[in-house]
Image (cartoon, rainbow, N blue to C red):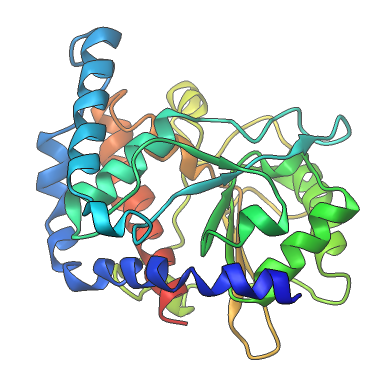
Length: 296
């Protein structure tokens, strides 16, 4: 445990960097206009143009970091894990790299936050987790954690880390992820969050719990949820669960029946998807999560 706590202390600078979110969140209140007029995507000149824009964005982020404080930046860290054939055949790399690159650039563009450019894929180990106060898991309905990974995640969360769980749908996905959760915390239960929970209002006040469908499903059905999954027990509404420590600090936010990764990755595919999901839900909810995390 001592070896875990020592690198954990080095996260102080990264938590301080997250404080930059609070300094200029007022900018995000007008983010609709900002995001709307600068939306690189597949409709704006093809892949070559999009890649050039991505490169320009990454260079801007890199130049904004003080060389003396290269570690005092926010890093969007994505967890790597094995997929289980019994769950969904969806791997940890769903939506990346574009989701990660677009999200980090939007944070850099619309706040005073200094953000590490590029993608950051990490293993679920005590050593790797200790470097990041916030980690993200996609394709969660197919995750398969071994005993060592479960222990590392338990230590990380109990020692101040935070996990956002995303990108899974329906009863079967939930049952599979719940089994992985019980490997991490055999004696803790996820708590269903209502709209009154502070995480839905801490910066952006949501009038209903956000739900972001996969882009292909939305264009096929114009529904806010993915079709083809078993919703007989839990229905297709968004379900947010929190896992808390003994002091009632939320350690894990589980976003069931949601696909935030697509909201970031595909923001430029079509103005309709951007205006309905990416701009009013995808980015504001992530800002709420980060702000809630660093203030609790």
